[in-house]
Length: 439
Ligand SMILES: [Zn+2]
Image (cartoon, rainbow, N blue to C red):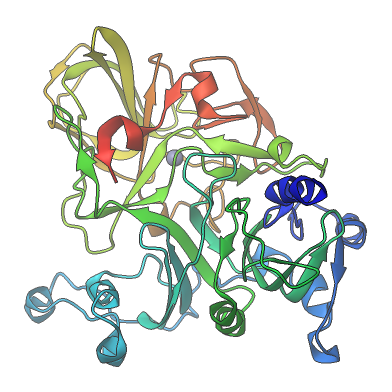
């Protein structure tokens, strides 16, 4: 009985509870928090809690906008040689990889960082790139199931604090080789009880678990400040009958899922749910070498709204909203951050399914709305190019139902693109489930 209660508590706390980093916290608040919630068990004096106390802000990450980064080969439009022979991003490591892992060799890394960890949640692998070449591939033992609170976050992050061993003061569970990749989310070993037996609960609280030996190697490889991209691919996505892909599925990947947790800042209250907003749409980003950057109507429909960048776009930039009638019900699809809308398209136009309506872009960012990744809030870069796709019950730029969000800069706003709780409650549907029969 007692153990089952503990299992329940573990389900609530393991993996997700350990709040180390919040850029908004004052340092003394943070140390108070850490002192009260976490007990550290350094293995030896060289791995003491000093590794935890320092380097806790994401600002120590690589300056991606700077010119100091070593460059590495990228597909070039001018070189026919490269066009005919795709770049091998596994370099000389390719031969040492098993056949399944060799498939990563010809997909460009998703960020031009010198050191980059790609968390591929579709294949359950973490790829480590150095200078644009895959160096190591770590298998993931367990991630949080998709669609539940908390699912494992997706997006651009960076490695935060590292700690060799930690224990929750709330439940008697230990974790080793814990590496923070986003706010409350860590990559660590399989947690265990005080008697050494492994925690079998499948609830990870959004953290990523690696088998113990893998977790050790990962810990030794990751450095605070390393770039991280957590994503799913569209490689296995199968469209439902009568639906059309919003982008070229072979040239895009999912950089942020519906419902993905986004830290909203504010004061730590002990309730994670209060501190996060959730992504109301699906972000689809082109591979760096993508040729087809078109945006296509997911279903036949009518143009009911076009919003231009900077004109009441609430951060979504150039946006188009289509109305569809599906099984007798009116449903709206919203396409945001567009670089341009196809010439001649206007409100009232009838659009056929699969018709090209726009081109992906990175319009509409602003400090008053949100900040994505490490970019300055008014400096969208190449990493920000993506389609923000929403499926919703009303043809509005924001939430179909009234909602208030605290966004990462601490401001309270009407929620646009995000919701304060499960987006389903506010009239949004998950575009992945809406469009695909499997993925
Ligand atoms: Zn989005």
